[in-house]
Every structure is written in C-alpha cells, then in structure tokens.
Length: 83
Image 1 (tube, rainbow, N blue to C red):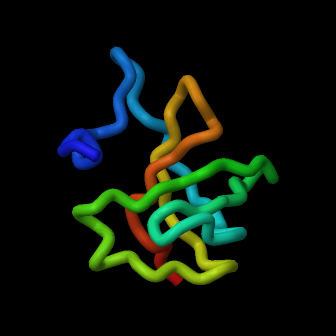
Image 2 (cartoon, rainbow, N blue to C red):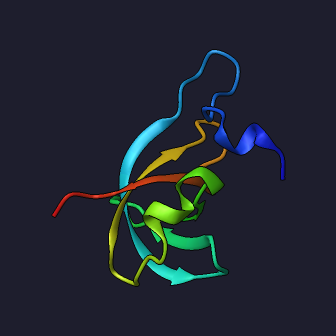
C-alpha cells in the first residue's frame, strides 16, 4: 500500500460521512466487518498510521468511521468510540 492510506478519504468535492459503527467480525489483522447504526454492514480498515493505537479491536467494540459517500461498502476506522 502507498502513503495514500494516510490521506483523507475524499472523492471529488464530497467529504466522507462520519459515523459510529460496531465491530462484527475481524476479517484480517487490519480489516473488520462493521455494523452501521442503520443495520447495514460495511468493511472497515485501520490505516497504518493508527494501527499501533487502535489495534486490536474486539467484536462488539464501537468505533468511529469515515465512509465513502459513493461506496457505503467501505470505510476507514479513525478512532475507538468514547465509552
């Protein structure tokens, strides 16, 4: 992967959608299946720059995500949600 993992997730002039999600399942070390508040599932990844801070994530844990406005099936995990 390139340094673009650290760049903001923008597509044209559209900013990302920020939401809270719940970890449903770990797909790999940095990729997780997440459940959004509306019940939809998405795949979220932890950027390399945040991996040391955020990992590991546990099933049921709440996280803050940035979702692509054009593809709700992918998201970037940006922080653990405050308890």
